[in-house]
Length: 306
Image 1 (cartoon, rainbow, N blue to C red):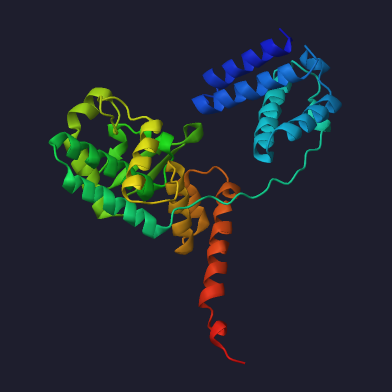
Image 2 (spheres, rainbow, N blue to C red):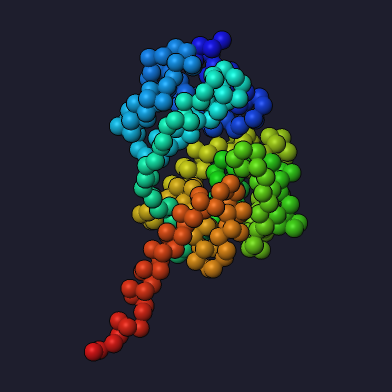
């Protein structure tokens, strides 16, 4: 049973059944750990040494970007902590490995607010131009999706997983189930957004009840993440927007807009569902970029003649 591959299978089963990790996290663990087993010459967990780990980490740095390496190391650390806890190994080899490397800060890509306004205006216009009732219904659905993304900053996976019971449109609240089965409640601050969602919910009431999800596709099934991406591409084309917009960029724009409006970063952390403030702090870099732009163009010193 101490065979490394068998231990990996046992660990993945433990993560699924006891830790209740989500599907995407389990997939990442599976890829990272199987890659580790294939990349080293040892068959037994007890044979893995600190020097072997250091060699493997060097190999990772040669093949992957720092962010990916960081994730793969985290997967390995969690696995070896599990082996140590279960007494499958006497000493955790990571205890003797020092890992320090600078991960470059990649600023989140945001959508200018005027571009979001243009996109939404185009969508509302398309609803008015719809030639059939069916066309109008699905433009309404599309509007509700985009309004929800920007109004809440939720992840696309969270949006597609929303259930009817998660929506309290009377009070304008949405219950979101995030990563690690963590719950958070977001208030819909715009009355216009609530009105659109109420209209959508009434128009698609039968399909929503049948499929059990709040956002539905043309077949009356759960709306997929790919469908949302295609939807955004469709309307950015109609709006003649050259910027390539992804669903996650609405999340970044939500957070950055709040930060620039002087909202405390800890409130933003809670609204985004980040477990650590360090993750949210990346938006402060975006705010600094905005600050530089403001000060380089608006500061009164630029008008001095000395």
